[in-house]
Image (cartoon, rainbow, N blue to C red; front, side, top):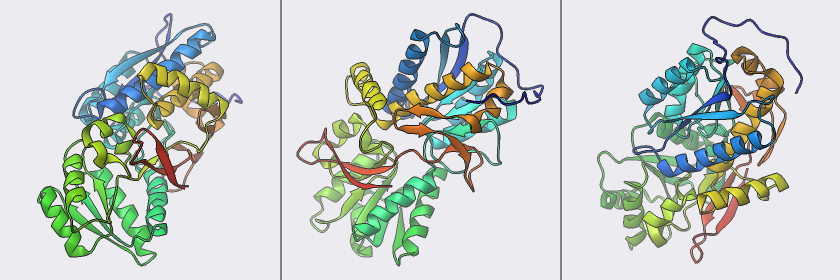
Length: 374
């Protein structure tokens, strides 16, 4: 990485206090209503990369330290955590899984002048305005969900139903799907889960002659109940049930949904074949998690890998860290990571992490089958 000229430092962009460690604030959903299993995978990836950074000399001889805060999928809690961590002198912020929570954290990071490398949230409008302080590893929702729409079209689906709940994230996803399908003569009908029972969803699928249902709802409920009702409805033997947000990626899905949870196509952000680095990291992550690592765990590892590279070249000055986003050129577990400005997205973006549509195999639910790649 080349060293940029030193930018002016705003009064709010405090550098970390002197001390024995270089601190990174980690935002992770570890308790309900957050998706705690996703948070555990994310944190495991973050922690593994910190350990490896410290085993190889740390940051200019200083150990890297994570200050972990549980967001519990609460935007207000995340914003308060950013305030607290900024006051504690972290050099940068990392993490977060839930898009709406990450948006709140990004807004506070931008206001305070604290660099934030978002690991896993995909909402396109992560910030209301372009900002130099925020970068992101996960593909934007418009990119990934367009690939998912293309998968549906390629499989012959043009009449799609979405079971949805009120959320900026779900509304954004529905809009992406509707626009893509409409361009190819398809349609999307919304089923408001505030007003429908799982049995009523089945009735609506029959009425609209939908060939695919997408679960744009919370996990485990009402997703698992909807899934069970549709699977058992004799009127819907051939319908495809999908979950583009990735709920089936984690083992909890199998525990909750059982055999119903197989053959549910979802998005994940992994290459078809991991590099030697990715394979090595995957083995260690598996040992630490006691199960196959999800793409979220790899996102956590890559986040610290990027931040460590920036900290080694730029030091701990917050403004210098943010100014270095466009200079990043780092080998991650899922490919070479570089940031750029993508039209319509106000943060520095890795364009793009690999995208797959996969499903769990019916006879072997611990095995995944790749259905489509972006």
